Amino acid sequence: MRLNTATSRRAFLTHAASVSALTAFPFIRASAQGKAAPSERVNLACCGIGNRGAEVVNSLAATGLCNIVALCDTDMGAKHTEKLLKKFPDVPRFKDFRQMLDKLGGSIDAVSVGTPDHSHFPICMMAMALGKHVYVEKPMAHTFQQLELMMQAEKKFKVATQMGNQGHSDGNYFQFKAWTEAGVIKNVRKVVAHMNSGRRWHKWNGNVTGLPPAEPLPETLDWDTWLAQVPFHDYNKDYINGDWRCWYDFGNGALGDWGAHILDTAHEFLRLGLPTEVGAVKLEGHNPYVFPMASTLSFKFPARGEGLPACEVLWYDGTTNIPELPPGFGKSVVTDGVPPPGGAPAAAPAKLGPGKEIYSDDLIFKGGSHGSQLAIIPEQKAKDMAKSLPPVPKSPSNHFKNFLLACKGQEVCRSRFEVAGTLCQMMAFGIIAQRLNAPKLVFDPASRQITNHAAANALLAGPPPRKGWEQFYRC
Image: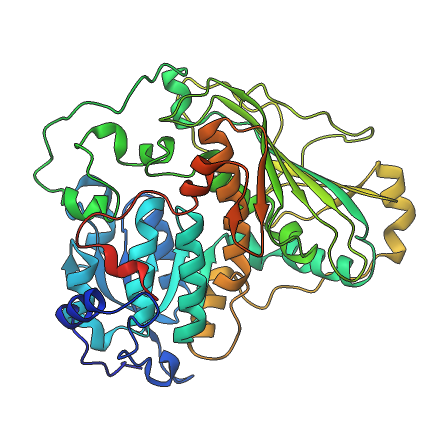
């Protein structure tokens, strides 16, 4: 299906800049909510076509449910984009997503976003405002406020949305759902999550005393568009090709990278919502520029309706920051088909696989990351209960197919923004605690404010956007 919209980038920018935060984009119509007829493929434009972005494009294309109609990357032609460009040699290419949507908006049904964390937000906001469905890698966005606006835009423009925590369409999703509904998982009072592999910033060993100095800008790179709404930074190679994840100004650290793969089902099916208290229990190598060498974070959730008790979630990262494991833990749960977390070449190997332990009144569960299923521990308890456990349905579609079928109106996205957004906001609180080394942040869900720490409250929104990028903050 081809969407019929005459709205150009010029009209988008001119109109959005002139209206208030409550009235931006009303002139844009998402024709029939952009749903493709069942017999047609979804016309997909792809932003971010190197590294992880390329994997996303290839996975969406492999479903056979989409036509790749545009490719966009701020470093188009750089080495990391070569392979995908050769695969789609005749597809139009752009460095600026705004120009892409301006020129080809009428022939685009959906947009995939596999760019650095900080640039997810403006691409998604413009795409949704133009009636395009959106698939975006995790985490959805960089700040609490951006996530709030993205959830509002999803609801307003009635588009299909999917965050790329791919395990949310695999066995763990359907098992957690079935076991919760059957009462096997109940009265959970503590969840411990951990990701203890080496990370990119470990190569600096905590010795970062400022932002990196200016270096010559590569001729192929559109640095201004790469920065997006973030205040201006001089180019340095330590910002690009994955190293952006190290810096508070651009990335979301180990928690933002892996929390969405480890905590997603617990957050959704335990209906945790937003925490009312978050704190940095322990930070090693804290500084205001890059993420700590190790972190232990606490998230406290109040009791919820239907008898759900108060619950604490503890997060551990750092190669030696290993949580205490319950008796009978055994070996880590291995996640099939997922490469080990990328880190610095010299980083120590993980002593514990990425995963979680879930403590209820009666049972303890251990799990891995992505789609790996839970196990009851100790092993003998699992054997005793095996015949009484409910069956786990098979997934009807992987995460990429689920999104494209939702674009066609045939399924509902499992990790749509209304589901994934609050999970990412929870993680955003943890990142604020890391950045400020704050032992206790108190959040009021009614006012959407951190009430005991002014600097932390300001970080819910982050710095004001650069000139020319303000319109993306209006929904």
